[in-house]
Length: 605
Image 1 (spheres, rainbow, N blue to C red):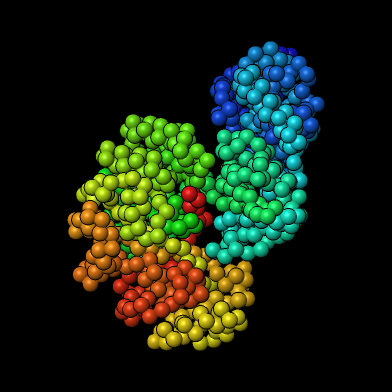
Image 2: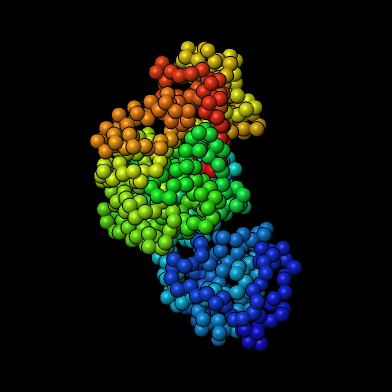
């Protein structure tokens, strides 16, 4: 029986009785010995971590020597098998698919070793791609890195699953000599999770970087703990797909810090969009932001420090725009794409901090120019962090496109100075159609409604907490019953943390002619004073509301604790407390708890 007959006989198309993953998927109709698509470049390969048919790998013996230049088997990390079974994918040359008669036997051997095949037919590729995969595998072996790091890979996946279950936004691995601590950042709090030896941690990091990361995402070809390195790992954890953004840097003496940010991607469509009030913006702020995103030209810029949720706000704003105007074309340029934005065409581009003066920016520039030529209605640039990206942002806006981006700045008004420092001229910044809106935000942890402690019952147990309590007692005596502190023991509903999420505090500026006049004359302080004065002149409570004042409203509403407010804005003093009574503030601003869904996900620039 020929290879084609075996592969596509009625028997081969029968659905197996096994409960494996492959059994649940329909087998494609007959029409060839392999899929019609031919993978010709490394970048077109699906996500994988191991060359299973490589030397010292579990399926090495399942290929004859004369087959090794025509066939490779890799793991398929995008699909999970059932029980103890694993999923693999076969790549072969077109010549092999036509002439070989042993693929059916190979399928049998794979099943005996508890491997499911997906896709259920081999994928065609070229000898060059096969040779490249084998060469990379051999290089790792020569460097002393075995791809079969099953123990280390399982350790990473266990850590990832535990972090996801705890709703952590970051995993910290801190090596000091031969000691290592693993910490999770949960609701802005860094909490110790586990310990391991420094040698084990180093091996874990090497495995993550060398064997598990996407090859194109690595800043260097091989792992080096004494240098700064970045990469990205794409995995299914707990049934959900996550992207882990990895960065490590050497720490003196004899140490290294590695941080991995968890970014959920490809989640269910219904979980994909949250309104601005759901994120914690006031009703008036939300109306202003929605108006900004609806403008046909100009740029919306979202600022904040690292971990303030800028990219998350941007993502939900774009998703809302697509839902409201499905006929438009949205294109994004991201380093790398952190979320799947349904309805948008997302283009990845790699920018390394080692190459900010060289070739990487050329790739970024070429990508933006290409996107501008592809008839977009809306362009999202992941982050403006250097003069080249600021210049490209300017060109995109001046070409008449609607644009949105993020930037690191310390206030909404501070975005102006940041762009000016990056080379954008004042006459451009002050143009009537250049800046559509300026947003600055922070994230504050929200108290558990089931165990938060009324201020009158709170007993501080440390000197630091005593200071917070005394300042709250002094400055908020008129609304003491509205204030709550975090429970130190917590409860079952909040997993004994006293916190249940995060909520945004923000300032939203919509520039007008007077404001832009100050910008043109480099009078940024006067521009801020003018904007602050609008709170007495307009009924829109978003006008003139500082990020700190938004946080103060949530403090007086019992949404956030005094200690978390001070951690975000500094020690409470008299000048922070000027304004109307809390009930009036809450009523006028339409304050919302706005639980933050998803991670804080800003690029560290």
